Image (cartoon, rainbow, N blue to C red; front, side, top):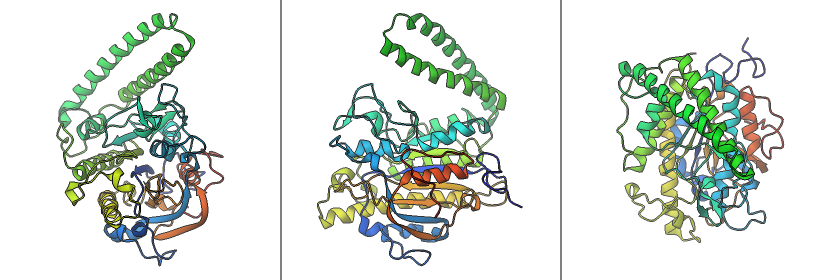
Length: 424
């Protein structure tokens, strides 16, 4: 008899295979007329944005009715893009500040990562196609830390995502060829230990000369240092990473946005296939991104287009961008479905993948009726192949609570959740 979620080990399926969790974020809202499905249950008709996903019809479900209230203004005024990225995975309201006193909350992926960190080489993997920004004013008085970081370790510590595919590969598997990785790993660990020893000694001397606020900041920094020390100890215990069977990507990120996205998705597939981690987030672009898409014939900036004011030409171009991002998701699902897992099922079968954003219509900046789908079967726990109309505004955190539950993590609440989502 298959084990229940309560009986089986953390982050495993009923068959005992690893269970994966991923979150892919798209910015600036969508063209809802092309996104929304017609009808419900398994007989629904996909919107035209989903054309590339028809072959995966039985592998995902679309939801209507999710909201993220903590991304709304709530008296804080403008800043929907920063609030959207920040609240999407935390279901928490970011403190409006562009200074160092950022405050948000732990994200769903990091709740999971904290619980299963001992099971894999990396607790989690954070990806992006944008640069790293942790300070400065990015959106109407909100820190860039909110807008450029999807994953949060704590209320004031974002998990910095990596945008260079080669750097991701080397983090997963080490530098050099397969035969060179053992030596490379030993050298890297020794170098990190040396740096950490220096930091610890220097920090003790510095601490007594700082004021209370700076001491708190230093303590937060040293907490991060201690986490690195734990990772080094685990890396030494686990030995040389698995051989992924493919060469490392080139040192520079591709100029083509589509190629860049697919390389990062390839890295996620490799991470899951080798069980280097079971948790990943991918900021496909930060909310407010004004990237153009000349490769699909859209030369205007995405954010500018999203303020469409009902202009049909702008809406048509938004729909093209939506379809472009959906094609990347289809590519990802292709890869997962074609990769056999340890139990004979596919990686896609044994995954839970949230895809969507925290703004529905970019012109309205609304944070309800969100464009959200859930791909994968969760090892058999979910019922894909449907359009689920929730019938009312439901906290997105209810879905996250259910995913944590399937991961084997018992939480009564997450963020602003009201209950674990059962109709999945």
